[in-house]
Length: 331
Image 1 (tube, rainbow, N blue to C red):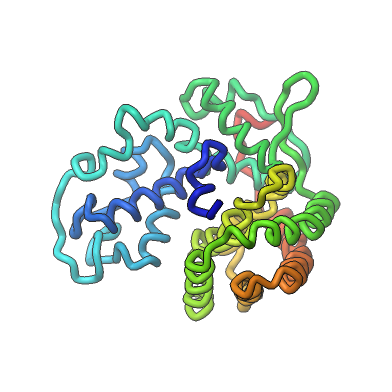
Image 2: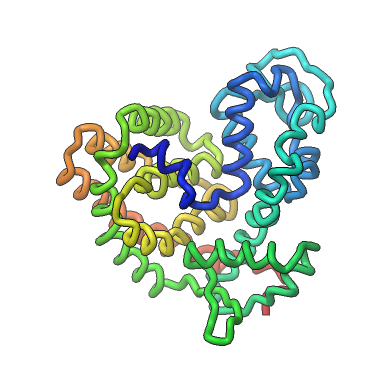
């Protein structure tokens, strides 16, 4: 089964709103369903989706880096390359299909997910805290089922957990837990990727290598959204075809490591002068292209092992410099 096949199975991982929005807009723009000249801005799109601006901002940044939209002499982005003539069309008319009656439930939990994830991830650096599910629903003005869906998604990533009394809490992301998570990743992730390798087509690998090479040339003038998406390319998407779903289930709980850098790097702290993961990802994908399982495992294990000290350092920096949000649903 190919990567594309896996992306369309019923067991497909739940995607965050920014991933869903980016994917749909990319397809709609490429296929002409969203015509050139339409202006896309954060606030109207967020209002249309009933979400915060953060996921909309991430999606637009990725589309801009793909060359599908561009900046112009005004607010937001225009669909098309620089210099495209502006067409003043109501955004609901051109993008209303994103939230039609049939698909609106798809966005229910996604609309607030990115905001909750950011708040909870930052709080995890400071210890264990309770989350009141009912108060979370009230805080965002949604039903309790929607709030529970968000917490369940966070649970799959190892960010939240329930005790024997079904009370939610934030799992602390301290140095000891980071070490434990990396021990799991270093042993299991290279194996899972090697098992997935034969089902990953060459054109997928070529696309990943092209994206990495382009980003490496532009670095550090790249967005946090792009850096996180590149992490997903290797550590999530390319591993999905692994036939051992138990391995994937274990690895999913280590993805809180990826969310740490997602919300910190380029946001809470500046991009480092040099980010070795780009070259290391290239090395892994080249081994995959050669179908060299032994080389792939070694390159992947080396990459994971080398990234642990950076993550520990980033978490420590956040603890020293960041004051957590005061939210009524966190006790």
